[in-house]
Every structure is written in C-alpha cells, then in structure tokens.
Length: 252
Picture 1 (cartoon, rainbow, N blue to C red):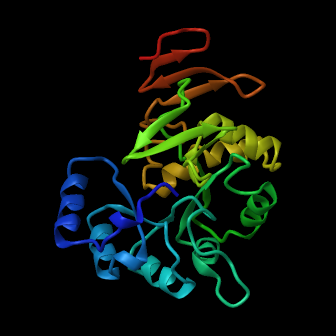
Picture 2: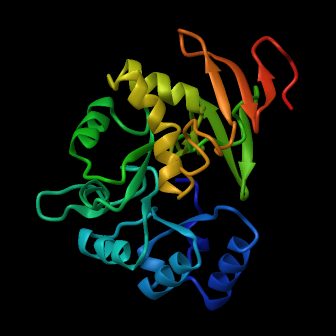
Picture 3: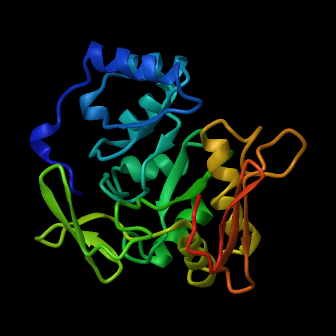
C-alpha cells in the first residue's frame, strides 16, 4: 500500500511500553502488526494488557499466523489486501483468517479492494465464532471534495472511487460505512440484517465492546443511525444526542 518500506523495523521494548501505557488511558486500542517484525511474546504481552492485536501488511504463512493467534492476536487487517494469499500448498494469512475461529477479519467492501465473488466465498467459508466485519480503510478524503492529500511525504490521489499513489498502487479506500453496507447487500447479496450486523454488532464483538456498542439494550450506548429505505443516512445520534440530520449543513 502507501507504507514506506524504509520505515519498517522490529518492535522494540519502548514501542511495547508505549502501547501498553496508551491502552491504560483509552477504552479501546487496536494495533496492526506484521509477524515478520514482532515476536509472539510481545503479542502475548500486548494482549494481556487489553490491546487488540491485528495481523496485517504481512507475507507470513499459515503456521506462523496460527502461532500468533495462539499468542493473543484476535484480528486480521483488511482481509485479502496486503497479505499472503491462499495457495494450494500454503494457505497464507488469508487462509488463517478464514480458518481460525478466534480471528475476526476486517473487509473493505468497495468492489475495488476485493472482488464480490471473493467476498462471497470468504463469507461462506469463514469459521466462527469470530466473524468478517466491514471496515472502510477511509482516509482524509471522506466527507470532502479533496482530490489529493499528502501522507508521510507521499501524494495520495482520489481516482474513480479509490485512493492511489502516483504509480497506481492502492493507498486506501474512498469509502464510508453506509456505502460498504449498500455494497455488501446489493452487490454481494448479503441479507440486509446481516449486512448491518457486519457494520455494528460484529465489529463491537471484535474489539470486546459488544456490552455497550453494536446493539440496543438497557445500559448500552445510545449510538444510533437512522437510514432511509434506500439506505441513505437520515440521522445520527451519539450518546443519545443527535449530531447529524440529512439536509443540514451542521455536524456536531
């Protein structure tokens, strides 16, 4: 993707300590690591500290991914993208994400990052109880008319519904969550109720927050979205307070 290979390095004791200290100040902390650059013992330490460890941007094999899942990794970052693919003799990180029941997997459902048929196959094959969840991989363009921006010294261009480097390499998604829901429902054919769960309940479960997010029940956060029959966003409430209404120029 848009990551500069020159910046890749092993995780240090200082990195680990910084993440653990940050987690103590935050309700949720998720970090993506590549097994090539992090030892399983560090993953175990992060997981014990309550950090959600996701595997991604990696060419690791199935056996290594399995070992990292056993150490405490519980997610895989944007399934199929920037990772080792399924092969007949090496299942890769994709195979591990689909086969290992404790790994949730984020999925960019925009029709550019992953083919609809591939999405359908993965949904049929994924072992539970962890599930495939919708993610946007959105960047600075969402909600704006920007055509480009700079990320770590590299220019990212907005082109035909995607974000790319000058050489055409995918650098992120020009996607919001309701667009992902529409795509997974209308193009992939997922039932609407399941598509909505993939954008709400299942992500909350993946980060250990389903006791307060992703569902309606006494004691949960009153975070809600009202949708039209055409799946357009009509209103948004955070903590019971309306922060967005369709047709209004104000977002609080």
